Amino acid sequence: MPNLVEPIKQTPENPKSISEVIQDIRDAHHYLVSLGKEASQTASQITTIDEWGSLVKRTKIIMPEGNRPKLISSEHESHSLIEVINQCATMERLIDALNWAIDALPNYYLLRCNPTTSSERSDNDHDIVLINPNNGQLSLFEVSDVTRGSDSNRKEFKDLASLGIQLGSMKTYMQSKNLFVNRLFMVVSIEFGNYILERIKRRYYDKSQPYFRYDEPVRQGNTYIFEVKER
Image (cartoon, rainbow, N blue to C red):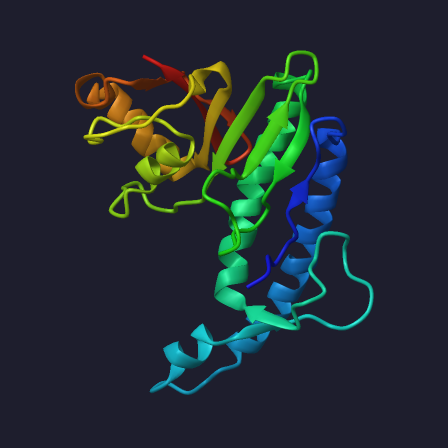
């Protein structure tokens, strides 16, 4: 299925300014929020009790014909409200990360960005890829909005693996180049960030993860940004 919000893909010779990208993503986000609010009102009017969960779960946003924001796919006529809520929340973390990068990574420009997830995303892609044109260094970001202060789905390690990080549980690991020549970041919710901070406090990573460590995170809005470093 095509992305709900189109990915941004630039060449290393023609990256985009981060501020320009933020505005495009914010326009798409606000469009989806507006439609989500309308669909939520529809869902709130469902009065049946026996099938309430089934009906609310299937509530959709309806995407009208006509002008749409630059990044909103023209292939969608409707979309699951629950999925839109989840993807808008992740986009909010992503926007926080880009806003932080404007000042924290002033020499970087945007190379690629995946505002919403899709089955078409390749295994070696990332939610945000920035490039420093002066030296070619990349900054890679994995973004999520886990609402729990726990990790029963092992989301942390899935995102670390997406960044190419070797985990303590990996029995075999093919590393074709030094991934730490790039800067690597995990972008998470406050709840999940507190979970990682508690693990750091308990020295979980010192004991169980010999290949990487987290720097002290920065907070941007309701988002924690952790840089992943080689141990």
